[in-house]
Amino acid sequence: MASKRLSVSAVLFAIVGGIVGIALGLGLGLLIGSALAAAFHVSQMEGAAGYFAVSIALIVTVVAVPVSILLTLSRRSSIPTAMLCRRIGTKARAVPAWVPVTWRFITEHRSASLC
Image 1 (cartoon, one colour):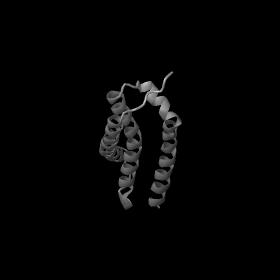
Image 2 (cartoon, helix red, strand yellow):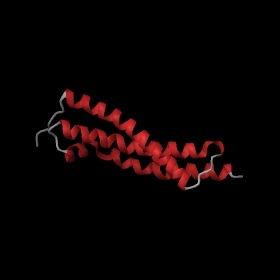
Image 3 (spheres, one colour):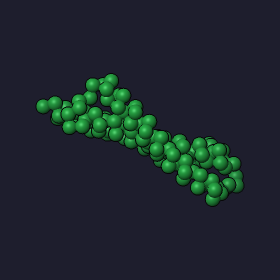
Image 4 (tube, helix red, strand yellow):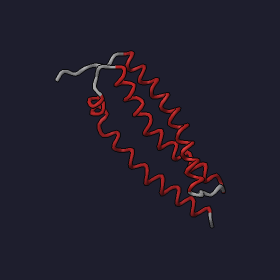
C-alpha cells in the first residue's frame, strides 16, 4: 500500500488542535478533579485536594491531546483514522500506566498528612 503524506496545513492544524486539546483537557480535568475531591472527601490540609485535582487534570490532558490531534488530522487529511492510529502505535498504551502511579502517590501523601 502506498504511503500517503500529510500536508503542511494538516500538520499545522494538528498543532493547533493539540494546543486546544491541552486547554480543554486541563480545564475539564480540573473541574472533574475538584468535583471528585469533594465527593471523595479529600483533605484540604496542605493542598491535598489541589494536588488531587491537578493529577486528575494531567490524566485527562494526556488522554485529550492525542484524541484532539487525531480528530483534527482525520478531519483535515484524507488519511483514515485507523491508519493514523497505527502510526501512533504503542504510545497510547503507556497512558494506563500513569493511573496506578498517581493513585499510589495520592494515597501515600494523604495518609501521611492525617498523622
